[in-house]
Length: 290
Length: 281
Image (cartoon, rainbow over all chains, first blue to last red):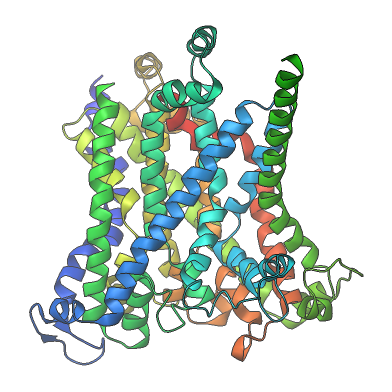
């Protein structure tokens, strides 16, 4: 099989993708490292200021709010997607007919652009005219509130967009895993008198724990990439209450022209994604072993 | 005893169906409402959007077709998507072939290197790419959106292709080589056609992402003539948040049509790609 060692062919197959991929993903990461040490508006001469940007960052009230918000944002998105997705998947296991229909319906929001879903939620949150959520509140006798300008509700309201939109993906993944557990294991447990809850906790969840881990990584990565929903709904406002790192970086770099400072924020986001890299390579290791 | 048991069975069943219906409504209602909103008069949408619709109209679509750039945006998204998808399928299938079938040291390393990209948020690369593209003079061109889209979609596509190629028996390649095929012929006329199903999966999954791109178009595109649909959907929000809701929802429906067609056409293929990891382990 000499042809499979062909060095020239190997280059033809690998190099174009490798070049593009490196140029777009990794060269910028390295450049960010350098830019973050500069005071630069993108047009004039950059000044080298060492770690000044990072020192400033940790005294920047808005950055600290954005970092906190970002963690809360990820927490909410991940838990909404995984918990609801898992719950629906388990419900579907007991459904005899119409499963395909429900799965199809659940997946539809995932194929629509985040911006459209964000606009949809904007009208759900609306106070004037009265939106859906306020209608429901009024039904229970509560005062209508402006979800997107209220300090306490704006962040959960913004995170709910992505949280809701991608539930279907996790439902599908969990359902596929749950339904591929060998039937005889479940039957044996039932004969031994296990209740459905015990079956779920002792057999099903342990059987698919790899898939749960993988879904957690997927969902975490997705939430960390979150940007479009807060950007289009509130642009981080009011008073930075829905600011996350990506929106803050965007504003600093492209509205205030502070490219060095923006790059420092970008590096913090990159550091967060390193957590995912470690998780993914752990997962890959485990895959290789099995 | 029997009655209590029976009663609890009935109530469990009732609770089960209640839950199923609740979850179905939370998933389906927003989408249904969005589609109907596209056909409702603007006055109704800005006074009582969640009342029962009284009349349906095509007025909103007329506004979109005659009085907006939405069709241009859809065309732009189309061009960007087609070019990106061709590049994604070609590049990722070739790399995957090399990784899984050709023999070289570091094939595992190359695979790992591509997997890392799964976790990198696009936001991290925006500033350097903006500077790079400005220097290369391709800012505000379609290329400035296509290049990052392709690069960012390579990891997931390679993951799918490698997973498929792994199951192609080496004997097929050996037989072709004995018949005198070179490595390019082996790939282009044997392996590539064999992977038609995987190609469709890769196309379907990537089309959704590429068509719905927001972040790269937002940062790299300036001219209205080149804007893509995700950006354009915000055209109807006037100053102070006054929104033409009818036109917004009409253009959302138009822009969602292609993805829905792909989804309903390739439903099985897409779910196959998604659940690949789930069933295997």
